[in-house]
Image (cartoon, rainbow, N blue to C red; front, side, top):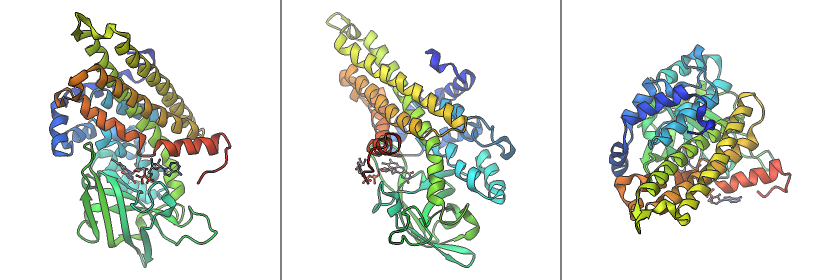
Length: 386
Ligand SMILES: Cc1cc2nc3c(=O)[nH]c(=O)nc-3n(C[C@H](O)[C@H](O)[C@H](O)COP(=O)(O)OP(=O)(O)OC[C@H]3O[C@@H](n4cnc5c(N)ncnc54)[C@H](O)[C@@H]3O)c2cc1C
């Protein structure tokens, strides 16, 4: 453990103890079946780790973002996978910041207790991809309901969530008008909606991620489920992105920590040509280099959280943290596979599983190119590219 890891020692120790109940064999079994880690998520919920960001008045523990980062980082560093439930930690922020007092009172305590799972985030569509404002799912107001038609893709955990935060168009895109106008965030109660205009189809992916296609056909949702003001939904989604990016970055730091620990141990233990392989600089240097990347990214996550907690604009740091951490975890993963030679590919070592899992974070929830575009335009003042 380095000096940087000393924050939230008690929380980290407790999370690590919980994770020890879910060893590699548990995750390998689920991975083969592409099954959801229900027991693991239940254990995290009961221990209160998924509600740390919800204020105490709504039944959460009201901890700062860095505490949530420590939890998610530890989960990954223990070889577990928080992607099955990480959205429950941060998605409630949209309701907290923009929901009406009645909406907060209704939903936040139930989300805090785990009685309601808010795990599904419906933004990406097949036709729009990264160009979010080109989305075509429509929510048309009809009396005191919205009638929703359209399709989302890559909606993770849709089959294991009670609520979905949906971004849909409530008024058409007008020529010359602002691209972000007319988009609204609506809370969809998926329990009521299933079979009444909502269809979910899982997508089998390279790793066990429970991502789905979601189809809406004349789905009726009470108008009172609109979060905040109609037409301001894109801004609300943007508001939550810095927290999301910092928390995903913390998960990447955890992954990188796991890979590095495994690499170091194996490089010390494995004897070839009568000496430990780690004595060869060709083996040691990639591990050391990836470790340096990891520690630099860790500092950026920390700086992003610090600014976020002070209420300062953390956009630059959150984006850089996400990119650097995703690249660092990938470098650690690559070094780990190479260090393990053939065993890097053996399922029983868990390395190939974690390798597949950590690759995602260079693409989702935002791809590296889009972070670079943000930095180029908004931080460095270069001409807008799209
Ligand atoms: C496993 C998984 C889980 C996901 N979970 C969710 C979820 O829960 N909810 C949700 O809403 N979405 C989710 N996503 C979607 C994810 O956010 C998108 O896949 C991601 O934002 C990239 O969008 P896209 O796949 O449409 O790629 P595209 O937009 O088609 O882009 C393809 C490639 O082109 C690059 N590119 C595109 N435009 C530019 C440009 N102007 N400049 C430079 N490069 C560019 C991109 O960087 C990318 O590498 C998930 C995706 C995956 C794979």
